[in-house]
Amino acid sequence: MTDVQRRTFLKGAAVATGVGLAGGPFHGFVNIANAAPIVDRYPGYGALLPRPDLRDGVVRLLLPRGFRYRSFEPAGSQLTDGTTVPPRHDGMAAFAGPGDLYTLVRNHEINGPVGAFGDPSQAYDPLTGGGTTTVEVDGFGNVSRSFVSLNGTQQNCSGGPMPWGTWVTCEETVNGGDVGPDFTGQPNDGLKKHGYIYEVPVGGVSAGRPIRSAGRFAHEAAAWDPVTKALYMTEDNFAFPSGFYRYFPPVDPMRLGRLLDGGRLQMLAVVNETTADLSGETEPAPPAGSRFLVRWVDIPDPDPTFRGTPSNDTAIQAVGLQGFAQGAARFSRLEGAVADNGRIHFVSTQGGTQPPDADEPSGYGHGRGQVWSYDTRRHILTLVYESPSKEVLDFPDNVTTSESGSLVICEDGGDGNYVRGLTVQGEIFDFAKNAIEGRENDEFAGSTFSPDWRTLFVNIQSDFGLSFAIWGPWEIGGFR
Image (cartoon, rainbow, N blue to C red; front, side, top):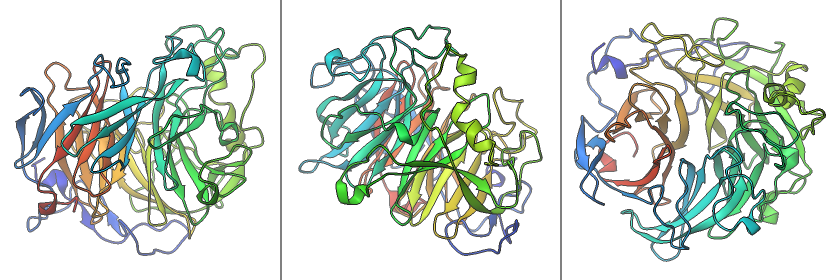
């Protein structure tokens, strides 16, 4: 497949599934791998070239001509509060900071009873090593201040920025003293219950209170919709079907300034279909462009406490099975999510049909990735894109929007990882590639534009993780 063909998508009628078509982002664009090339427009920024890191001159990224970057706060260095920077930098969001600075709130996806970073007396659970750090930084990667903003949580994967000025961070685990060992084999004796979401105030320190009514499951990402006044959440249940959820807090956080516990949790289902398989795991995957009218089912026990220390495999399905028993839809590994003008865009990392150039992945799902969009006003779910090849898109993970509305997609594949763009015209392009010597397969995570759209911040998530600030001529390509 040529470089042009890799980025070619057929503009045509979507496949309607029980509902009519409507306008909006990605409307009517269906990915057809063998479509005729579009040669009169290039949505990206050109060829990717080795670029030196302005921090030390080492080449860590391939970027288009004209773009520059500086890395900052690698694992093992020091935050300005004196704490060692934890590894596994993951989901992140950028907010307006003091003066000309931006404030980043950044997850660290650390699993197991390894002890809290920072001050253990301030930790939700002093035995566990996940949490968030907050960084005040300029648009060129120069750090002014950084500190621990939440500790003692576990496997903080993604989350989402809230319009009232907080970051919601999500635990991708249900570990706890009431659950048997997880995939690492480490015992959970003495741990508090985990598997929750937490709020972190921008520029401040979290109280470390779990929002239990928002569910105890393998949380991944969160996005707020002001119309429905609901928090939409994805589930990344690696070996089992995952669900798409929403949480209604008891008081409007736009008025209160924070998210309260004690609300109602629901799970998405397809109208007139019982436990629809939208992943392609047990039935043929729906074609790109498919649309589904949805309904929502209540989860009666969002915060289970387990008796007799069940296996982790049993515990991690406990919330989802309540929804599936009422006909909720099944997805494969739902990860990144972002709110945009009445829609929630989210990705299914292993959803879709297995491409001919890809091996069968482990876990639930056969494909190389789907991109979904839920219209919160019209209650319509649309499959806007499916990867036809691991060379085009390989296991999408974290996602954000750009100034133009194009999606910025981080990869978590196994043959070198990229940051890709997916335009509202349905065209995909490469923007960055991991070029860290010997660690090219480390995943990208936490993509987020600064509030003025001048800088793209993104992380490498690994034991040797670090953050990047990237800037350049955005106006010549698909992100602006």
